[in-house]
Image (cartoon, rainbow, N blue to C red):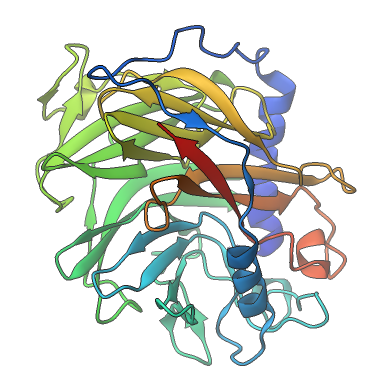
Length: 391
């Protein structure tokens, strides 16, 4: 099989979403539970979110620049972590590199053109705002940071954390059997030295026996790193599971949140479902006595809703579902456009503002340069918003 093309990758994702549209039950209603009170503190309140204009403009300027032809012009996933030296590393999955011509892209190499399309990359942003792209391979022949084992597999990025002088990032490996056949296989952990982000120091297996995609979100809190995972059952919904390790090294012993309410088993089989309706990527962050889970709602296919849930513990339960933003891009002027995988960025969040990103894509299956993601580079780029928060 030839390397995964843009059309195959996009159609595979689109087909899974379309199956949800056609077969899923009606969306569940929002949580009726009252907002939790944690250690006597009232729940935080959220204001009206708005586009983070300066950061969006920075990525637009960088993506449109042809100063280099092996750097980022668009991608999805959009995780981030801040390094001790002040740099911010953005972790992406499918990524367009190369040239932009008057707001359009040449075809990918796999589709007969010149645009490299690796399945995972970094964009590194300095404290002054300068951006560079980290990828594998060479300038002339860029590849994924974590190359696939063969042409029938790929790795998509999960959340990121810092452990000493390294970045640790789980990746999800998928088998690709064609445009309509994409299957999750396993989780792995890649470790990158902060002094060289272009190739991993090591890649090791992570728990995968339950088909839970671990690393949807990571949170360091109270001497532990919490690892949140998504079980994607297609038309049967997407569900949250939680594990944790002591310290900051994800290679440590994993303990799972079980039916006892505690992290008291090292067996992945003992992990219990904690919430339904989460996305394949989301975030969990701490604010005072509260833990905020932020996700794109998946109870309703192609939902525009970005929702928050609250808990008094990083291990849940998460309740008090609220919609804090509706993405305006979905269907606006183009019925193929949709948004997905929203999450907050602790690397940029302040005491009164949460920075959130979400991804934009198209269901267009047109072959050739008239495909949406070729003819309009702005579609396949993250959008950043500011979400005011108080309390």
